[in-house]
Image 1 (tube, rainbow, N blue to C red):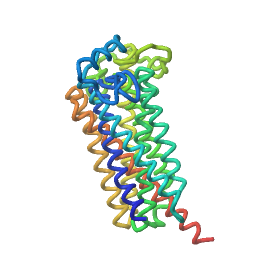
Image 2 (image 1 turned 30 degrees about the vertical axis):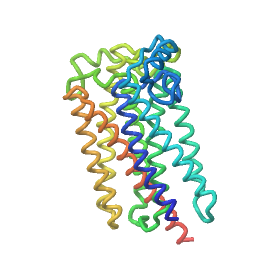
Image 3 (image 1 turned 120 degrees about the vertical axis):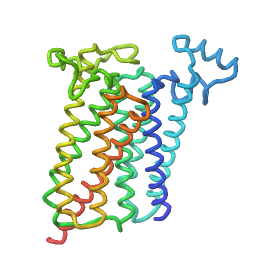
Image 4 (image 1 turned 180 degrees about the vertical axis):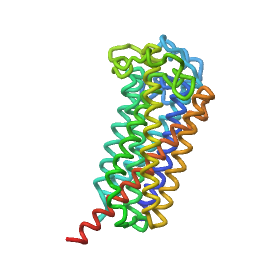
Length: 334
């Protein structure tokens, strides 16, 4: 069991690193730093010798080599590949150990394989927004499921609080609202709409008249290249406005849930999870505001992505704790 616990712990931190690197790669416009997959211009690392660079330019004349962007992309791939191998180790370790949970490791392995496919399609489909957003959600899902797997392997951190049974529907709603807001954020980033509005609290004067919902949420299939976006300015502004409105809804729903949870929770574990989630919610909203005020500084934008992933992970852990408390109590009453 110790080995599986260590593997799960390392995998969580490695996933956090991959999420950070993925955000940094996207925000430095390095998503197509290597126009092929899984290598880079036909090599396992960024070409640097003169004859290799010449061969790369001949193979991809439409996309000249930019070493700094290529290295951003390849470092992300190296870390993501290492994470895939680690999750495979988690899966096989569970398969060969009796009385070890096997369903979740299997789901994790399937998800990381699908994530690799999304990473490939991100490149081969030239940053198709639907794929880019899916890749983001897949990474966040991996982090959440690894955290649940870690909790399964550490029963001493599992709580049983009958007072929280009635909060399960609200906990589920909070998770779903946050997932929807993260998807909106991913859609905003994938369509280069993060700076479509630079005024607060909503947008520039006349924004209501410029809303274009049909184009904003169209999949825009069929384009040859999606780098720097294919939407009109009005559609990008619409996406941005929806993300801001989603942020307000998310803060309200999560605040109500976390306040109720804090009042009813009795265990130290649940109190700490609640306080951590509330803190991250405040930080996340502040980072979102700063993204607008400071015109999307790189470090702030990367942190905005990273905090969202951790906030979702905490909410999922809280939901799982409440769900397991309900399940245990139901068994006891039978």
